[in-house]
Length: 239
Image 1 (cartoon, rainbow, N blue to C red):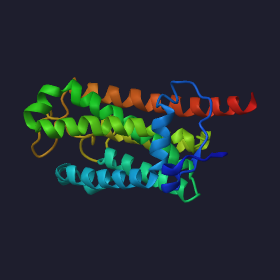
Image 2: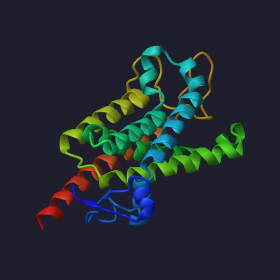
Image 3: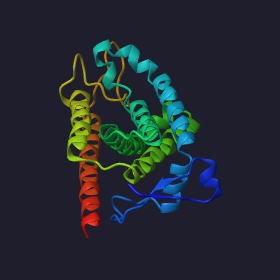
């Protein structure tokens, strides 16, 4: 892909950034200036996401204690999403962009970046009764920032169908074990305050249905947007 050189600040941060292709607003809604800044500061963005990954695993420590070890890979959804994008950006910066990793990063950051704010807002009374306000706001805005990150990946990713299939398989499997067919015990989605917690987590209806509906809708949205990005890239290049 062609590279566009930027000014002194860009050079300070190894600032060659990929050209911004002519894509529809719905697959590239982030202003170009913000995309460019994020790509120039790529290593800082990687570090921030790795810090978020560490915090996320710490945040999930309680739920890890409730879940069987076999279910652990399906528990830390947001920390895995920030890890995926950290590795995606780092791979691109090192000149070895991996499409399957880019797709996982896009799906993870878009899905969890929107699902968590959705859940926080749907159950805001319960969350605010059990969570400090500063932590509630931090979770809300940090996850929205994850969704913004997802829409920068198109600058260096191609989203081939096979890579989108890999991401859909992983996040589709997550939806199955989180809400419908758990690996062992009960479903494994992130705990929410309306759930009774004793020897096992209680999955209350309609709360369970509401969080499941949000997750499924966002998996479908991520699939559509990734494939739409692919199609629009190919159409723009053939025009």
